[in-house]
Image (cartoon, rainbow, N blue to C red; front, side):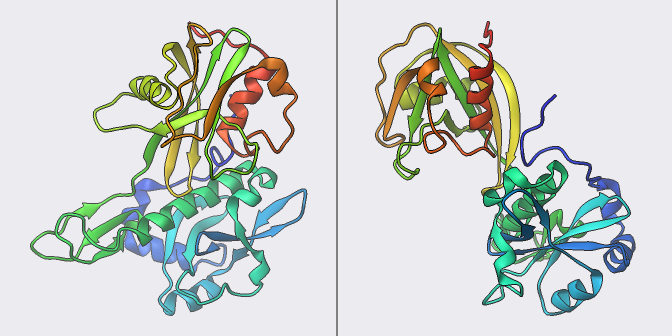
Length: 301
């Protein structure tokens, strides 16, 4: 089974071991421990046009930064040592070499699968910590626990535990015969078209979200669908759940201007002729949904 970019990898998250504070301390100070640095949504990598690898720091560098108040969160075990995400966002400027700090999406397609998954995990976890510094139940400050996988409310009267959250969203390629339905948002680069997507609402199944989002955005009724694949999307903290869906006909499109700038049916030949400017980025599940359809028609019940 093909795993989408930012998923998969060999990282052992070692969930049961996170509760052992002494073990975590020993892992963080072990000579084989490695820390990946993040600065304001950017990640430190060594990159060229054809490949990229995380810029890894040893425990001595990490100890200096952590003693200065910069938090580190345990990601898991990989090979011979522990891996941590180090949040340096409080610094006024990224540490040297500053040019190594880049947007993860700019290097996603040239990272090894394992590295892409680890960096996506770290980016999402750090964002969650940055946006959950106070208890959602009582408003008191929270503190990181279990290596960064829980935030504990510090109010004795509350003490609520808060766990990292992922917001599910559906993403779907709708087809009818030899045509597919694509749309665009105004903020995208000029000419880019993509699949339809939207967040799952409370009390809603994934399938219901597909039907609702397609109808709301384009007015096209979905006749049937099937699951395709999923993708962690740490921008900032989503899980994209991909579907292939079938419409009964190439029904007229009625665009919701609050959601999309435009949407239309495109033939297989038209999509095959799209250049890179018009297609979704290669690191996205949207690109894979379209690519799989171009490679071979899929049978949706």
